[in-house]
Structure formats: structure tokens, C-alpha cells
Image (tube, rainbow, N blue to C red; front, side):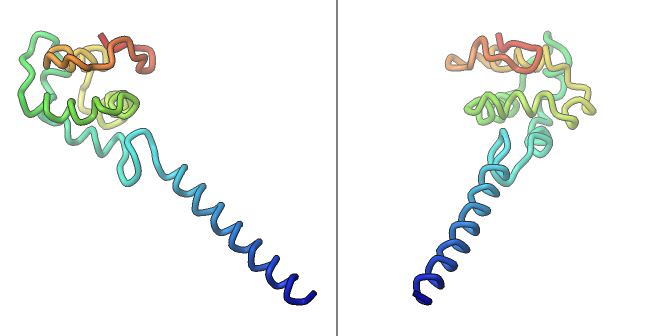
Length: 120
């Protein structure tokens, strides 16, 4: 009987520890995945600066390459474009959301809701 109680106690501890690990994994993964934040990802979009402020500005290839990576995860792209870093950099989200189209991405998430904006 004593062995069964020990076993149940150990099993209970393992279940609790496993649950805590699972919760950390779920909570630790934001819109852009584990180990990064939308603000960190926004820094990678520095080549997009003028294109994200002026819809008539040309979009550099280096910007298109970064947006293509982020565009694989539309929720991350939205979080980046609406991030504090993007806002403080003068990014206009409505104009920035036109970059995938201006880069001529065929498989862009057209119609994806990004806060109050929609990807064209």
C-alpha cells in the first residue's frame, strides 16, 4: 500500500511538472513563434521604411525578401506591422499592408484581417 501511495505521489508531481512545461510552451509562443517578438521582427523590416510610409515609393528587394518570410505567417506579419516598434518608426499600417501586393507575391493572404485593416 505504501508503494502505491509513493507511486501516485510521484505520478502526480510528474503530471504537474508536465502541465507547467506545456503551459510555458503554449504561452511562450506568440504570433511570431517562440524566441521572438513582433517588435524584434519589426527591426528586420528596416529596408521597408520608405515603402511603409509612401505607397508610391518603390519597394526594395531586401524588403520583399523579409516580408515574404513574415508573410508565411499572416498573424505574425500583422503583429509586426501593428507593433510599437513599427509605429515609432513611422510605419503607416494601411500602406505597409500593400507591400506584399507591391512585391507581386502571388500567394499573399488577400483579405486577411489585420486589426482594423485588410490585406489587399
